[in-house]
Image (tube, rainbow, N blue to C red; front, side, top):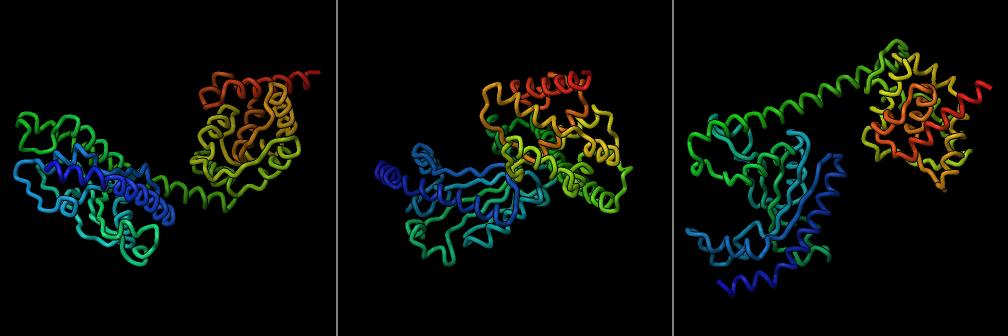
Length: 355
C-alpha cells in the first residue's frame, strides 16, 4: 500500500493539471452555450483521501490509479433545476462518457428516500481534442463531473457536515425530520424554476407594452428594463457625460443593470408609469452630470467610469432632488465618497435655482 500511495503522490501534479484544464474547458463550454452557473469547482484527490479510499474494508483494487474514477473531479453548480439537464447535454456532446449516474434525480428517488440530488458522469477526453498537444498528457485519464443546483449543493454540504451520507446509519427518529427537510429543498428548487419562468413572462408582457408605446404601463423592474433597452434618450446622457469627463464603459457585466436602484429612485421621485418616467428624464437638467463630475474631481478622483444605466440613475437622483438622502444612497450600495458628491451636487443645484 505504501508503494501505491507513493506512486499516486508522485502522479498527483498531473491530476492537478488535469483538473485545472477541465475547469477552464467546462467554463468555455458553458459560456459558449450561454448556460449560467454559480461556480465550477475542480480538484485532484488529496493523498490522504486516496489512502483512506484504498484502505476501506471490502474494497480491493489491483490497479487503483486506473480503477478509481474520481482522482480528478469537477463540480458544476447551477442556479436552476432544469439547467442540470442542459449542462449534462453539453458534457455528453464534448466528452467521451464512460459512466452516467442519474439515480439521484428527483423523479427516480423512492417516495420515502432522501439524499443529495445530482448527476454524475465519468468522462474522458474524446474526439479531436485528444490529439491536441495540451491534452496529450491526459488522453488516458478519466474524471468525475458532478452537476448540482445551489440548493442541492447546500443539502449535500449540510448532510455531509452531519455525517449522514447513508440512511442506514441514521437513527429512525431522525429520519422523518431529514425527509421533511429534503422535501423542502426539492420544493425550493422547483419554486425557483417557477419564479424564473414567471419573471420571463412578465418581461415578455412588458416588452409588448413598450413596443406598442403604452405610456400608462406601471413601473416595474421588467418594464424599466424593456423601456431603457429601447429608449434613445439615454444616449444624450452618455454624450454629455463624455464631454464633461466621465469614462463610459459597457454594462454587459452588470447583472441587473441598476434596475432595483433605478426603480426605487423613480418611486422616491413620485414617478409611477413609463410616460411619467420618459417626460421626467427628457426634461432633466443634464448640467447635473457636470456638477457631479467636478465635485468628484475636486475630492481627489482623477477618473470615473460609469455605465449608461448608472447615468440614468444619476439623472433620476437629480430629479428626486432633496428627497434623496445620504442614508438612501448608502443603502443602494453607493460608496460613501460618491454618495457625498451626489448629495452636494443636488444641494448646489438647489442653491443655483434659488439664486
